[in-house]
Amino acid sequence: MRPSIRWFAILAAGLVISLAGVAQAQPAPGRQSWGKPGVSFLQYRTDAVECAWLAGSATPVSVPPVDQMFAMEGQDVFEVTESAKRGQHRIRNNVADQLAPALETCLRRRGYRPFRLTDDQNAQLKGLKRGSASRHRYLYGLAIDPEVLKGQGL
Image (cartoon, rainbow, N blue to C red; front, side, top):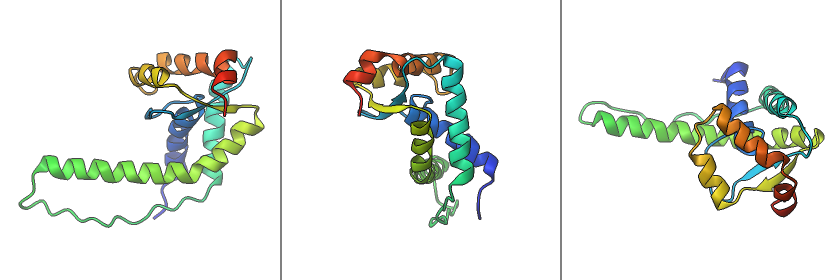
């Protein structure tokens, strides 16, 4: 079964936020983000959403069938819930990996370049709620900072 394009657009938007600095996602030490000197905040966010949509709509994505079956009898509800969360996380990561090349191509075509976040930047990002204006503003500040782009550029 293939998920809907709308689902991919939402997922891709999250991917942009995680990969792009033009977006957000689960921070991991040394993770990559994207920046472009001189870009306005509005253009930065527009590029994030458009590239996410393009990647999600143009990339054929394969989601492996679920290998696990849950038998509620004799299992703790908490264990079943946690197992389901882990499965969803694996699927999101799998889809994100498949969308990454198209997303990166789109961002590069628009003049964005990757840079690596420092441990301190990751820690700061982790304290900001996903999807929040403060998180978007924080990533935007990094994405346009010439010192960050020069010193942490990939």
